[in-house]
Length: 251
Image 1 (tube, rainbow, N blue to C red):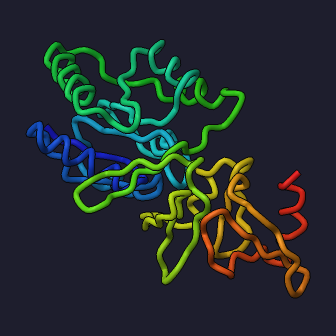
Image 2 (image 1 turned 90 degrees about the vertical axis):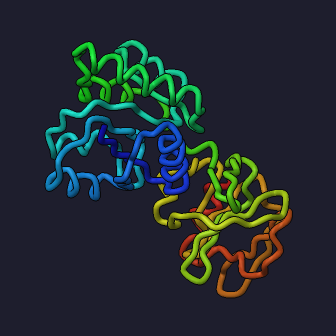
């Protein structure tokens, strides 16, 4: 059985790969964006099964199928809840809610094998599903981040993150517990993933959580210096061109 994982969070993709390997299911191909997936499917044999994240860093994964006709069976992996999950259930579409549970993964794979052996129709009406999910009244932003710590995977709620910052070509998050963790992403990619009511990009280097702001001080060149509850660096500065929008955001 050939399996492809399409997931923009590389630690999550690697964890899913390890879980599948433990089930003797080999997922040797991992794709991380809409663009990369379109390129791969355009020039490679399509797999039997795709584990597909709904929201990728450069758009909804449905955009892949607008460019390439794919007949593979799909199991969605998603952080969506409530309304969107109801859309999956109503259409009898297999999905796994992140973080993926080992037993639920085993059940989903077993269900795929059973339906495949019975010759059941495994195709998904992606346009209909996209329409149902796209009609949600409010967008969905990441509620948690999965971080690899040694051999372990740690989940951090977005509300527990004081800031995101870039340093030495790396992207980090800093928690209310006073810990920082390296992310496998960029600040630019985070723009679509972070709730704009909670996080604001104050400069090229920082995103800050409104609930972590302890103080704001007038700074040189009409800028503002931000003091966070636990993050103590002095260069948390609102860029001059961002000050006006930042003040509107605060209100």
